[in-house]
Length: 114
Length: 113
Picture 1 (cartoon, each protein chain N blue to C red):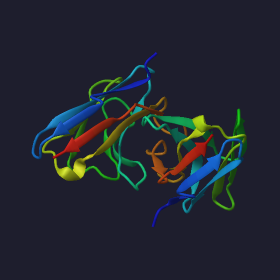
Picture 2: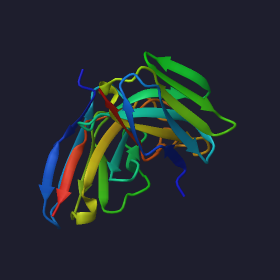
Picture 3: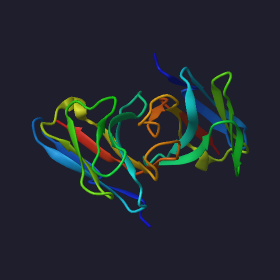
């Protein structure tokens, strides 16, 4: 049982390039989340999806787009990467749509933008 | 203003010591989480609590709702406990987004043998 799988684990981009971070969970969870983690700051929510077919903005959505492809997969796209988007990105999921539940995290994607 | 504050930011302990990490929050919450981030980067959930106290092995988490404060204790600390410990809260009033978490900046713990 893999849990939450993120690909790639590492990526280096040039400013202006685009890429998609992939996230898949095999736990039949309804809600999925994308966070970024920067030095000296707590995890910040970029986008979330409470259920298949819905997505909502979090605290720091600018420069990103997301797709909830199906119940398993939630992707994060950088259309035109900027150095300020250098960060570690985490995907997470919970079983329900709402309410208090522990989140299950992927191992992260370390993204550097030159 | 940070809604979730942790202290200390960094903590170094000797193996066997009793460790306490604190978390204070300024908003109404429906639950508080303690997470552990390993040196390799992965994040795992340790506890979720909305009242009282929970214990798992050598880890104990407590919460005081009236004082808006939680503590994570580690008894008989070991070098393998070295990690970043993160406090996070579910805000009570945001209908449709109660699953969303607000995170503290983390406490980096290093346990020396």
